[in-house]
Length: 420
Image (cartoon, rainbow, N blue to C red; front, side, top):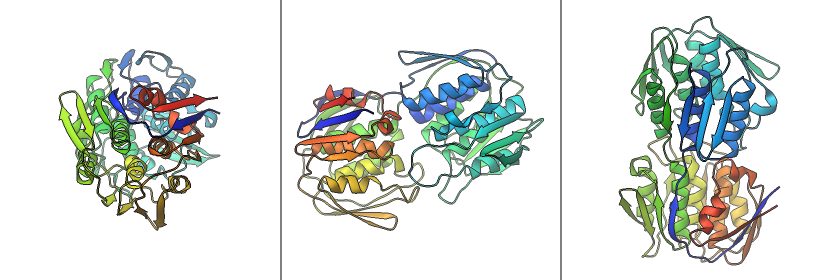
């Protein structure tokens, strides 16, 4: 396993570019591979472990995919194989995205229950609810989801869960509905930019999807979809991580490819804390000319504060004088990074679904362990701000969602070395 060795105390300065969005690319790759009749070319695709795993899943279904320098060329599935096996699907939760497209294209699917990071229970009940509403019959047997449907039929579907709308379920139902007969209306659909990107991509393939980015998405089923050429949006979570990297190191950095409308909740909170954001045509300039002040943060579904930025902003609050409270409403168990930050000298207490943070003057480098993707990101941020050396193990979690993050940060002044 690789480790990241971070020498703290370096001030970041320069320009860093944001890669394509992992969470947008995942369903788009699935749609291009399973739903289209002709090849597609996808651009701005990041080189990430999660996407590599998904490509292996799709190759197992009969597709041919070739990745080079951010471009993914896709030859669609051969319409024979409908099983996504456990040994691949267990590695990544987003493999569940193949379920809806397989049912609507082949009439059947056998997909293992998915795996992923350990940030608390994330059931697939809304995925199954939506597909059942479209007419699929679904059984659970031996750890697999077995689904069949001669023809999916459009209908009205309510997708609100106990923690709000579901991005994954919205995407899965959208992909299933594009080839269904009739009109499908999804109520309480997720509004994230990644859903808008998927809707735009499906429409470019010939689908008829309207309302992407709103709580009501309408899909008019079509007979078939064709291949296309498309570039996915930049990764707003990577951009947000770099914004906090600039703040936590008292840096002076420009983040290229950051889209302001995708990051309004985070930008508003950073401004409240005292970070200076200067939005320009191609990105945002980050500085911290004034002392930072504490603030309370509550995660919520989009356009609220993203749960995928909760760990990173906690790293900033850990070094901000005064008391801050972060409340996690999406994944209440998503606090495993707290113990690692406390090992570095932070003062953070867990109280139910909230973390109470008493800011300290400095952190100290220590050996720490990434428990999930975003927890790994905050440990890099904390290591860059800490005194001394921080050694981060289990960095494969980080590699799932950040493309060459140590190289990008090193290019703007960080001292981070990857060691086998």
